Image 1 (cartoon, helix red, strand yellow):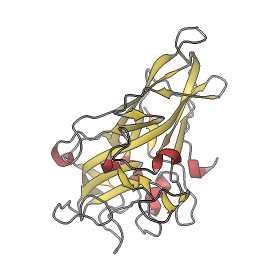
Image 2 (tube, rainbow, N blue to C red):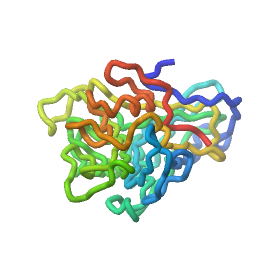
Image 3 (tube, helix red, strand yellow):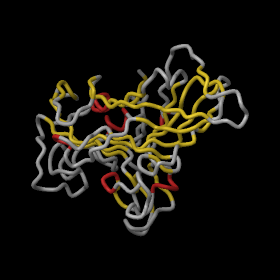
Length: 295
């Protein structure tokens, strides 16, 4: 198993589910549902969660959003069949969808009111038993001008710059040791001068400037996940930020580094977080990803 694109694979025997009528050219709509959690508890703006990380901190989240792309259904023979996303240009465009758990209320007041908890698309009729998807934005869509891009790629809150591209995941929170402040913006884009943030995106992107699209990125930092047993009618993809923070100290921040972990190289706060995503970091291989599971 390659850990740089770690797979989260259930050990449960596959249950085949059927999609669509038995007509060669018919496509049926399928919905993959997502739920945000913190240590198994439903994510909620302004709610406090205890026993987080190595210091058993209490956190109060203020944002939780992520981009999902390249969604496939796994057929009975193990082949990956692309889910053609519905082009609503609100939550989905091309092969990318924005999952938004925050609702703009309470501590998440800097977000948006609407939430989106599913990826919706059509697939050729057939027998399917699992799913595969990627946390992240594909390279060809990741480096451009969000002010002229169609939604959801128009979200400037989910964008760094042309060179680095989008934040594949954005999670911000206050912690026991680092209460959230609003009077001194974080120079690295964390949304606050304190608190703790996890912003996942590509780094080491080679270009002339921050406003020039790169030709490549040394650290793509996309996470591909596969559940060999998954029924969209019954199962939900859980994204649990508590599992990502389990081996991190969210009550401290290394001096002269961005708030929390923003994927940049040589940040002492990042190794346990990147490892939990299943991603290599600082010359160390990634582990088995802990962020996604099925329920």
